[in-house]
Image (tube, rainbow, N blue to C red):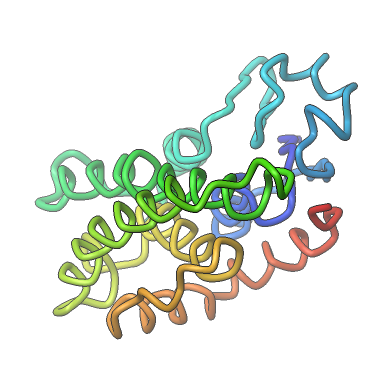
Length: 211
């Protein structure tokens, strides 16, 4: 059985969601955040201490969006992935990479310097700068959703899981939801209404809350 190491509301929610969408049996291992500080034994499993971490036989993976893509390839076929012969395949790949490199990364800076650092180490200027970065990149999502329900292929895919998690993080954790346009807001609500997300949320809620 697959084993997914997970912390509440972190990027590991992406593969958790994908597993529940595909109804693949798995064992969740729920850890406090950050595990490298609060569950030191985890470093014996994943020396860099990041979340997620997937075990599937001899397979070991640490990147949330890559794990989603792996699951669709290894345990498909599934409508959650686009094939190279589909028109929107390049768009599918672009959204997958956009989700972390462009939408999630700036949020980590905002989160660190507004919430996670000790009060004396918090810094509003870098947080504000990266909030502005996030807002600028968010415009591409708002524009893309003006004439479609999902991002590519005419259906819900792991590209939506990847992007919707970045929006979920912004809205529920980082505090940037006020910046959402109407298309982004409606899209996030559609994604979170899916049975797969609801099942993943039940598991997510069992993980220790952030300290």
